[in-house]
Image (cartoon, rainbow, N blue to C red; front, top):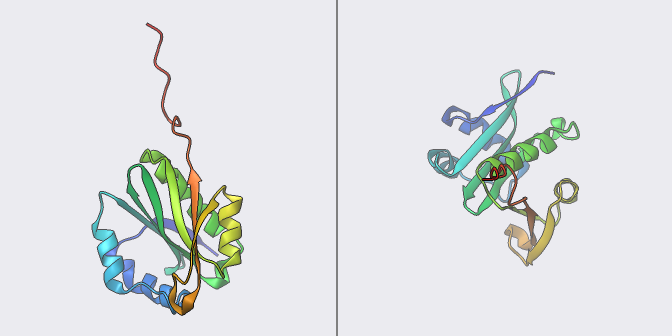
Amino acid sequence: MSVTLREMTVSDIPAVHQLETELFPEDAWPVAAFESELAQVETRNYWVYENDGTVVGYAGLCTVLPISDVQTIAISPEFQGRGLGRKLLTLLIDTARERKALDVMLEVRFDNPNAIGLYESMGFVTIHRRVGYYKGGVDALIMRLQLDAGQGQEEEPNA
């Protein structure tokens, strides 16, 4: 297995969309949504995991200060449980810090305990529950990770 991480390009969209529809059949983004996201280079960052030329995971972040929002994160079932999702989430959090965000937000289906467990293990806390948010009437949990407002800032030298 040779999994590599790189920035997503427009040429990745068909493979990403195929994986999206397999993983989230009721809630899959249309191709145009991925095209729109990648076109917004000032506020968006997207990555893919590849294994032997096949996309096996992807993630995206939107940053409009003071908040970064996890737009999407997904790993192919045969590659789950190997720490790839945690590495992607860590990359999203690090990118939010680099962009000087104060909070990272995300929405997750209430019926996705694996994702919720990952997010909680990374410090996210549930701040709201949106009843019936997803198709099929499934609730969404709104989760937030507060970042250190002073992180990355050097102390001013004494005068």
